[in-house]
Length: 126
Image 1 (tube, rainbow, N blue to C red):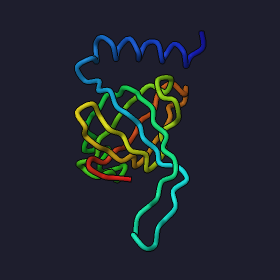
Image 2: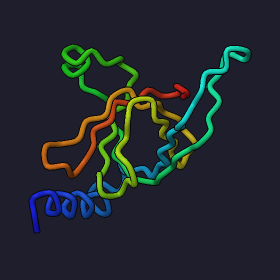
Image 3: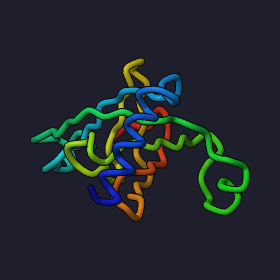
């Protein structure tokens, strides 16, 4: 078993047990093949891609807000890479079980490729 598999196994166990209170299921949504409609001023999506995952939702620390330039209301989501059918990208939409909607502002995979850290903004739409 490689490093990535070990990390994913340990994180999965933590998500199931120790972090269960902090873990939220979500659906990741991406509109693909969108065209801008100049008449309506909207995007016409021809295809949507969705997938489910789980993540730990947390606030950014003051030092992260100061040094990284994130907005104070942004949310950090740490999710397992092996539970997602595709890699999250900027402008993807993340919708929680409680129907809270977040826009992915930044997505970073850890060096081992086991998890993603997402910077999300609540209430933003695609």
